Image (cartoon, rainbow, N blue to C red):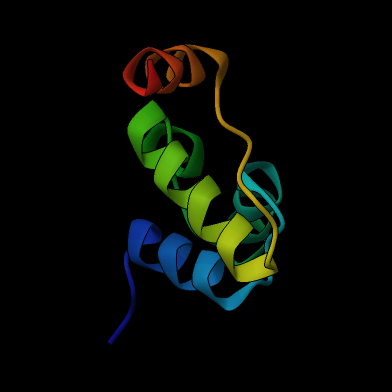
Length: 76
């Protein structure tokens, strides 16, 4: 059974083979996946994949400034 592009993206992210979303997209394209940019255009999906890549690599994920402001507001 062939994985969809999104399923393959999550698989690669969990494997630690991609350091970030840009390298993940590059790898997917090299593997022959189609419509990579369109399918991974969602900011939410990119955020999930970035977090998974970071966790798989054992490093903290960079928090976007807008999300950090929300976190800071809740901590007060």
